[in-house]
Length: 385
Image (cartoon, rainbow, N blue to C red):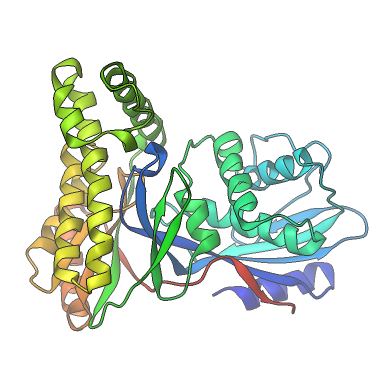
């Protein structure tokens, strides 16, 4: 964790003791692309994340990125989106929404840094948003609830970063619990913590180190395709407002009316929602074998029906399938690159990584990175310095 680095840089720049905040990234165990369809997801906050140092300032406001070695002075009264530097927009959107609620921000200094690999599908953007709004809420005693901060963070992602994400990423970063995953109903925002007792197994991320440029445009396309499906299905079943409301039987009844691609997109989401509900029962029973099979089934749907995988991700899942010590694997995140999540026996990690890295390099000429991830707590104050 980069707390000490953020703290020491803050003291160097601003000669003050800062408030320290940690905002975690997240993994999603199962339930991909269901969140913006009002469905179910099963995320967990992880120990890696983004660290912030804050203190009030006398004159100007300054936000400093350790990663980019850049400082930016926002206009607190008029935080309009900027072309450069891009990272500032996550924070400008937050300031916009704090102002929109009639809350008062005074000048402040902020330094931030993180240990989340970008582009790996671990929601570094949500961690930035959640940590920033949480820190300002603490610093200025704004009185925002966790749910209000989640919505502010999501609004910023939609309107300043331009990604029409569901609520899962921000919810996970804000509400995570140590050693737990949780099942979240993205329609009602009701959630249930699930103990993540993996015994001799652990969670391993294999990073393809690719991010195909399709990712953001195709993400928004998938949202439109799902909405197209809802429009057609709702002509037959008036109560349908989102794919969350669609049963497998209803989908089959509308199959002839749906274009093939739209049918496939809807089929994946309907099946994936059911998988999340069943997988939560697996975790409660401690049945990791059944849980792992659902991870493989989820990946097959993401690859063939939803078409958000890529050759690199599919290859890493195939390598996992050949290993009896890996109970399940699938791509995580928006798709077209990033990581696979593997449920692997801890005694097999080193051996698997040696063979997988060699095979992956041999196939694609790309080095594969890996990260062991542990469930961690949500966005919180680390220390008052």
